[in-house]
Image (cartoon, rainbow, N blue to C red; front, side, top):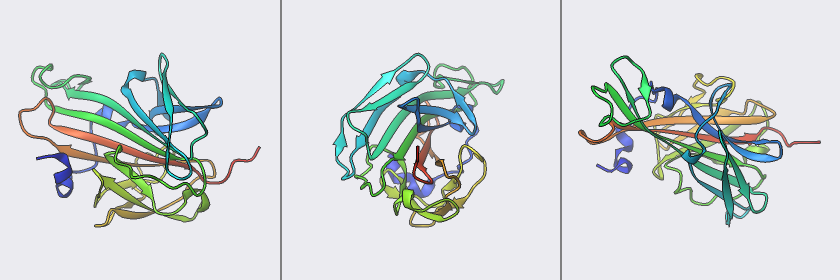
Length: 240
C-alpha cells in the first residue's frame, strides 16, 4: 500500500530512534539562511549532502531559484532574491537498531538481527514575508501549513495551522509549538481536518514541529518511514 493511502493508519508519533528524534529548520545566521539539524537547544553537525532539495518562493508563491551550498558540517541556502517562503528536504537515510540498542545509519539488510528500522525524512517550511502566498506544497510529504499570516499574529496569540500528509489532512498529529524551547511538550493535536490551534510562543524565531511514522510492507529494507516537519516564522518584525 502506498504511504498516501495510510493516513488513517498513522501509528504513535513518539519515535524512539535517535535519528528520528532530531528535526530540521532554517535559521538566518551571519547573513545566511542555514539549514539546522537539531533537537531542542541542540544544534548538530550533519552531512550536508543529506540536504537533497530546497525550494524558494516569492510573495505571490512563484518559484525563486535557490542553490544549496554544502559545507563540511552543514548546508547554506542561497536564493537568487530574498524569498517570502522557503522549503527544505533532508533525507536522513535508513537507520537500524542493533540488539545492543544502538542505532546505525544502515538498513536492516546490512545490520544483523536488527530489532527496529526506519527511513527518516525531515522537512521544513519557513515564512519570511508578511502576506506571502504559499504554493501547493507537494514537495513536502509532511507539512504544517499556517491558515493565516503567522507574522501578523503576535506572541501570546493563537495561530491556526493544518497538517498535511501526502497532501491530505492528517488527523491526530501532536504539535510541538516551541520545538527549540520545549521539544517534548505537545501544544495541540490535529482534528479530523488536520487542523489545530497553537499559541505563538516567542517574539523571535518560532519553530512549530510535527512528526509521523508510516508502516511499510513487510520484508523491505526498513519497517517504516519517519517523517518530521517544521514551520518557522518570527513572532514580531525584526528591527535594527
